[in-house]
Length: 129
Length: 115
Image (cartoon, rainbow over the protein chains, first blue to last red):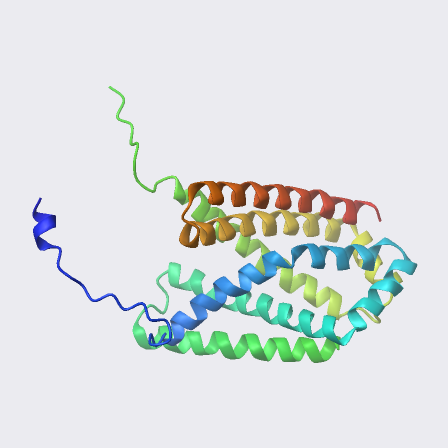
C-alpha cells in the first residue's frame, strides 16, 4: 500500500539515440551482439568444419569456399565476435569475483577488452589470411 | 510441514553456474587448441585432420562443442527473456533453439568420429 504512494512519475528516457552508453555498457551490449551472431552462424561454421575434415576432396572445396573474399570478411567478423565474447567473458568472470568493480577499473578493463579483442582479431586474421 | 519456496529466482543459480563453468572450459580449450593449430608445420588436409585424429583432441573437442551448445542455449534464452514478450512466440523460439542445438551436437559427433 505504501508502495503505491511512494511511486512517483519517473522520467522515462528511452530515446536510444540520446542515451550515451558508457564504455562498460558498450562492452556489455557487444558481448550480447557477438554471442547472438555466433549462435546464428553456427550451422555455417559446423559446415566449414565438416568440409575441412571429411576428405581431401572436401578439404579442397572448403579451401575455395573460405578463399572467397566475401566469406573471408564474414569469417573475420566472426573471429572478432569470438575474440570479443572471449575477452569480455573473462572480464565478466572477474567482475563476478568482485575484481575491478570500482568505476575507474571497470572503465579501464572495458577499454582493454575492446583493444585486445581487436588486436587479436588483426593478428590471427593476418596469420590465417 | 513442508516449507517449499514456490517463487523467486533460485532456479536460475544452476544456469548461472553452468554458463560460467562452460565458459571456463571453452577458454582453456580455445587457448590449447589455437596453440596446437597455429603450431602446425603446414595447413594441409593431412596435418589438419591428423590433429583431430588424435583421441585426446577429439574427446575434448567434442566436450567443447557440448559446452558451447549448452552455453549458447543459456545465452540465447536470456536474450529471448529480455526481448520476446509474447509467451507463444517465446516458447516456439525455445523449441526451435533446443532442436537446433541438439541437432548440432549430433552433427559435431558425426564430424569428429567419422575420421
